[in-house]
Structures are given as structure tokens and as C-alpha cells.
Image 1 (cartoon, rainbow, N blue to C red):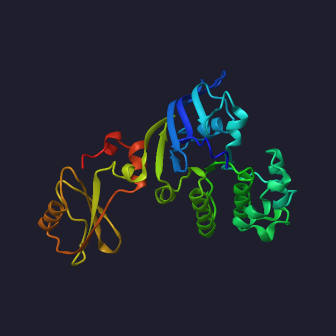
Image 2 (tube, helix red, strand yellow):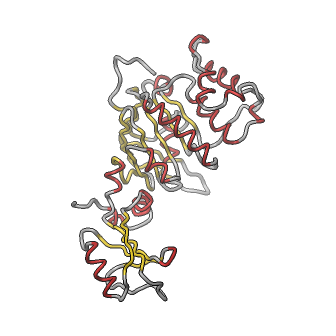
Image 3 (tube, rainbow, N blue to C red):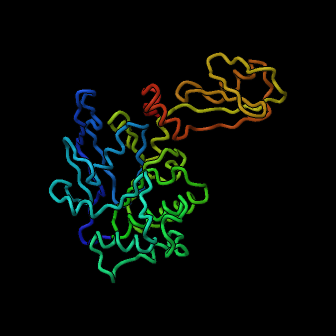
Length: 324
């Protein structure tokens, strides 16, 4: 990593960040970021979520030095991106969404060239260590063009780490890869995070973010609409589900006045209720009053997908903080 005598409290700090793309005769200017404030603590596993067009890629590209901001400030590892752009970028390792492969190099050559770009002395390079860590040792001397898509993704992670950056940005790193590769990649990411590397992850797999990230920010239309520890974010919805398995098969869904009822597999059904307005006992009483004999019940709390949809597509009031 970098010097340990002056580690910043926050890995990334963004204040009032704005980006407007200039228009032309055919299209008006487009505002991609609208005063974004975001603080990512050092050592965290931080999730950045949002629908397509929310501004995630623009934010990452500004941090990486690919896109110029219109307004606001951003600091990476305590280095302002305007005042110290090279030092700020040196603190980042970025794994982009698109696979970028040097097809005429071997994986080991690719890492050596990448390390040279960052000025890493030959004695300090970790090419073989990174290849081993990401399960590519047996492909070290094969041409990159012969690697599978999953192997190329792992190679991109290794390339992002050649200069030992304290922050790693993973932009949709498991898009289109198989389950086993996802498992292996997350095992490695967890390990380097435990060693102190700050991880910024964007993903469309909400279950990944829920399982991996200690803090999650959700963006929508160029703004951060939520940024909280993952457990706290999940408590934003006060809706719970009661899954009811009836004693005998039903001809159709029961009518339970005051509650939403949805069918589940194997004859079960779900009754949704607001924790601040009803209780499980009230739900069960209403189900019995509808003529259903209950064989079994389970309850479900909201997951990240519920919160995400409420904040980006649904009624914002549906995700307001609860009182309990």
C-alpha cells in the first residue's frame, strides 16, 4: 500500500460533484451528476448501486481521470484530483466493466507491462504472486487471446493491482461469468479487503452487494438517494411478508381485507403488512377469518432488491426510515 504514517480516514471523499455533458444541435446538454456527496471510509467494502443512467460510471470515470468534472471536489487517498491528479490516480486500481485484453501478450507479460506503466521497479513487481492468487499460474505463458472470458476478467483484476493500490474499484466485475468464478473472485476480494484494501464495487447482482458490502450507496438520476450501512439500509422498508402454507389446497387466493396477497409455489401464499400498522397476529387472524386453516408460516424481512426498487423506481415514501 502507501505510506502507513499518514493514512487518511477516508479512502474517497466527493463533495458537490457535478457533471454536465455538452449538447449539440441534435441533443441538449445532459446532466449526469447533480451535486453528489459521497464518503468512502478507508478499509471498507463499499457498494455503489443504481439503475442504468444513474451516474455511477460517470462518477467512477471522474475518479479515474477519464472524465473531467463540471463542479465540486473529489479526493482519493487524501489527494485532491485537481491539485495532485497523478498521485490521486496512483492510489486507484480500476477494473472496468468492459474486458480490455492485450491479446498478443501472455498474462505475465501483460502484468509486467502494466507494472512498467506505473513505474514499479522490477524487484518490487508481483506478477507471479498475482497470477497465483487469481488462479492463472498455469496460463502465465499462454497468449491472452486464448483465455476464456472469465480468465480475462481475473487478469484484469491482477492488472489493476500491479502497483499495489490502496483502493480497488470493481465495475460490474462478475457480469456474465459463471457461479464458480464469481465465488473465487469474491474470496480473493474479501481477502485483500481484510488486508486493508478499500473496495468500491458496482454490481447489478443485488445479492452480491447485500452479502459483501458493509456500506451501500444508491444513486438515481445523478444523485445519491441513500448511503448507509447495509443492515440500516435494509431496515428502510417497514414491510414484512408472512408466508402461509394452508392445511389443505385452496381453489384460489384467499381474500384478506386490508392486506396484499400473492401466490407462492406449492400452494403457499404471501401476505404483506406494514410493521408500523399491523402485526403477525393480526395477519394470522385475518387469514383464519378468510376461512384458511394454517399448516405453517414463515416471515420474511425486506432484502436489498426491495429497498433498491423503492428508492429508484417506486414511491420514495415507501423506503422512509422506520421508527423501530
